[in-house]
Image (tube, rainbow, N blue to C red):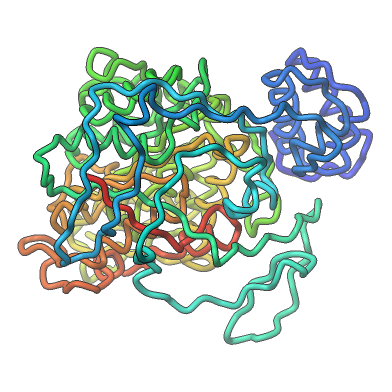
Length: 583
């Protein structure tokens, strides 16, 4: 499938009509005309058509030009969308189970106090609000206060005697100034060249990216490792899901993707299946149909195709017998089963290819293991969604700016890099590893494989590019799921490397706890801050790192906050959050 632009309007219509005929879609010419006017690449045209047709089919609406505008641009006034249903309370007996925020906010090195929450053996189902589809535009990426279509009935919180402490980012790296939303398109400026000429805008011209509202703070719920009530962490994970709003995110009959990392065979840092069983139980209780999912890997290993991937998942404890849900690989048998999702207003892509099972799911629970990463510095919810749900081709596009470089003086010709390379681009010549850059696509596996630090990363453009590309794939993966995604992040076993490796190094800090939120950016910022606020553990790669030091940057040499900052800029969430502790 070519990524070349199609200049002829008639040829674009031909591509759309051919795709509609193949898929059995009934789409009038006015809607096809709208899509053809908006996009110019074959993959993007087809992805836009699928999004419009799928949305109409799920909602029982008629496809027309206004429908295409709703799906692709967020234009709501021209289309009648079913009225939101006000959710019922999360329990048949409000007196026995009231969702109240705990007054004490977790602060590192402070003594925590906890309010009692009545124990309820089983919660009754809540009725979820119907969330209208929102496309990948400035409407989707506006902050929560701006995109809420109608007020949602939630339990009233009792007035607090004093405002809760607010967590702002632990540190504020320098960030190039961002052009206001009044500019015709987003422009990033450089300190060396304060007023560079903007690059030619790709067609179609993306709408300007909205600035996040500084006043809006996201809720991030936190269950610390210490249990004053001596209550299981598994049960408290269930409470986190409840407080974060799982009942409102799932409608009866929803297909719910539970996105996780199954861990490479031999790795022990991934989230344990016992926690996934609790997630599955909660999803089923609210009427959802859960399945565990991840997409195939780009590198050699035990998860590069669906057969090996499922086998690895079972060996690591993820099976129907252990978690009560099937394992479905998002991008199919060989990593080619994906959907091209159009996105607008970003720096690198106008469409991204996401695993089909994740795109077609109605809702999603993202279960992430917080850790370091050799190419991005930090791995949290964003990397789990963006890199994790991209097809193998998408992963290659994300890695395309990264190239490894060998320091000959450090190389011992151990051949570990040779064995790790998925495209056989590395050979030993005169007892030194040599990389063929014609074959190398920048997956970075050799960087982590080298035990002597002889292979480092060089960048074709800027080191920030891979993190920005991950964020843009997050945008595609979340398309159409506004209000339908819950994030659950485990700040435990914080290893310095990705779980894609067949080993797990010692955790760089002590286990901290688990976080839950509906805000992708806030949960990653909170996780980052908690690790920064912890002390490095003796005997680990974090040894000697003090409280307040950036463990991820100190260990990997990479600023892992690039993705968090970029995601806030493009409206995927906010870095400003309130950390609410539950017991």
